[in-house]
Length: 119
Image 1 (tube, helix red, strand yellow):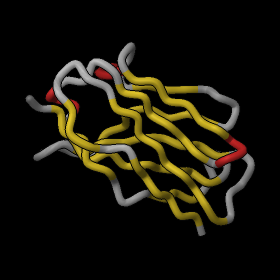
Image 2 (cartoon, one colour):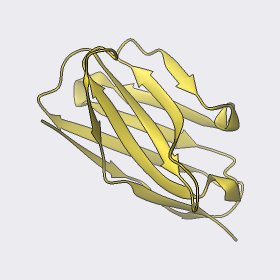
Image 3 (cartoon, helix red, strand yellow):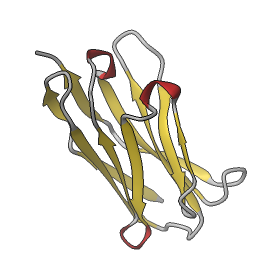
Image 4 (cartoon, one colour):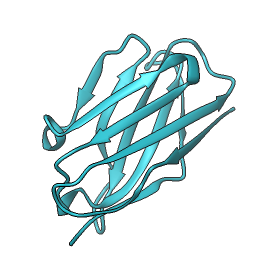
């Protein structure tokens, strides 16, 4: 079992920045993928960014150039630096881990952290 705990959400003005963190604990394989998803009001959950243990990243087009995902493998922690935030970035942000190789690993989700971008 793996537990994921997110932190760092909050209220920020347009153009501002926030940094989200997600710490994983439990029985974690050395090969895994961690990522951030978000679900805005009335919208489906969507991928924001992901990163594997080798450091390969993937971003949604809507956040490229503004968001940066990174990880500390020794701490089993993934970060999402969000800059130039827009009102449309308002959502609950969820941490996800695929524990093991993507095609075989078990998926875990955090409970989410609210990000609100507003004046």
